Length: 415
Ligand code: GLA
Image: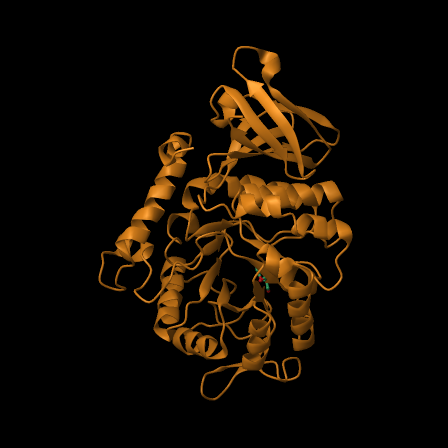
C-alpha cells in the first residue's frame, strides 16, 4: 500500500497528530525560554530528545509493595524484568515510588533511607542500568510526599541535579500537600530544573487530573495522570476507563494521558477482567507500568503482560488514543484505535455480568467496504478474511464477549 493510500485511511484527528509529530521532527527542537509560552510548552529544549514518542512502559513499586521498598526488592525486580521477557517486551523503566526517602541533609540534598538502600541510589541505578533497564524515582511538589516523606517544595534544582548525578531516567512527581500551589507553574518549574540538570529524564505528572493537565501538560511532562488512584478491582477499572476516555485529543507522540498503573497480577480481578484492563489501557495508548510482583508471576499474568500483539497496539507509532465508536446502551462498547499501517485495533468491551454478543460494521470503524483481514489478539489467531460491503446487515463482524471481558482484534483492509 502506498503512503498516500495509508494516509487516506487514517481519520483526520490521527492525521493531525501524525503531521504534528512529523513537523516537530522536521523543524527540530526549539530553544528553551525564548519562545512565546505556547511554543515553549510544546517544544523540547535543544539538548532534549523526544522522551516518550510512544507511551512509557515499565514497572512501579506502589500498587503491590506500597512503602515496603528496599534495594533487595529492586535488584530482584531488575533481574526478573530481564529474565521473564518483560524487558524484551518493552517494559524498560524500573521506578521506585514513595518511601525511598527519609530526610534532607544540611546541604539540602534528599537522603535515601540508609537502612533500606544501604548501597545508595547511584549504585542501585548502576545495577538497574547493567540489566539494560532505565531507573526511576518518585517525589512530590509539596513539602511532603503522600506518605509524609520530604517533598521537593523549594528544592527543584537540588533534587533535579541529584537525580541526574544518580543516573535517574524517570521521575514521578506527585501532588500531595500542594493543592494551594499553581500546578502548571510548579510542574513547569520542575521541568526546567530537570533541563538545567542536563540529563534526559521522563517527567511523570501525578496530580490526578485535578488541574486539567490535559489542557497544559504536553511539553511539560511526558505523561500525566487523569484520575484518582486505581484500585485492584473491576469497578475502579471501569470508572477510570470512562474518565480517561474524555481526554483523547490531548494524547499523542511525546505526551500521554495516564489512567494510572496496572493492577494485572495483583489478585483482585478475574483473568477476563485483567485482560480487559490491559486491553483498554492499550486501546487508550496508556503508559503500561506493571504494578505486580514480577518475581512471582503466574502463567496467566505473563500471558497478559507479555502479550506482544496487544502491546504493539499500545506502542503504535501513530500514537492515537483510541475511543468508543459504538456505545450500545446495555453494557457493550466497541472501541477503535487507528494504527500506523492503516489497520484498526478494535476492542469489544463487555461491562455486563453475562456473555454478550457484539458486532461492528466496517463503516463504523473507518474501513472501506469490502474484504478485510481479521486477527484475534488474545487467541493469537488469524480469523481469515471478513467481507462487509455495507449492503447487508448480516455482513457485520460479530463476536461473543465474556462477562467483564474483551475480544480484541486487529483488522487490515484488503485481502
Ligand atoms: C499518590 C499517587 C500514587 C502513589 C502514592 C504514594 O496517591 O497517586 O500513585 O504514588 O501517592 O504515596
